[in-house]
Image (cartoon, rainbow, N blue to C red; front, side, top):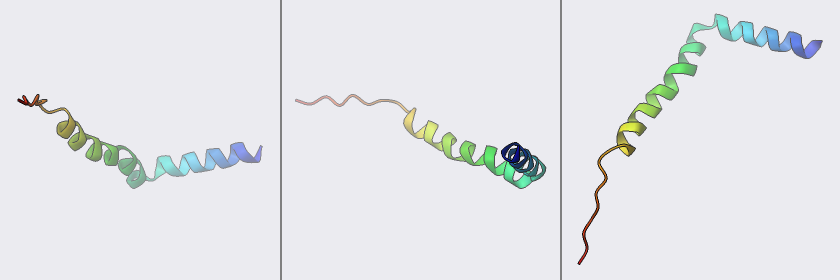
Length: 49
């Protein structure tokens, strides 16, 4: 019973805090977008010899 009340309290606090919600969704986007463009570029097949 105490654990469910704790989970409920923490989830309510997270949903009320707009800055935390923005950080939870925007930070991964800001990191993954440049990673996508860096690693999804043209592949180069070097010809040796």
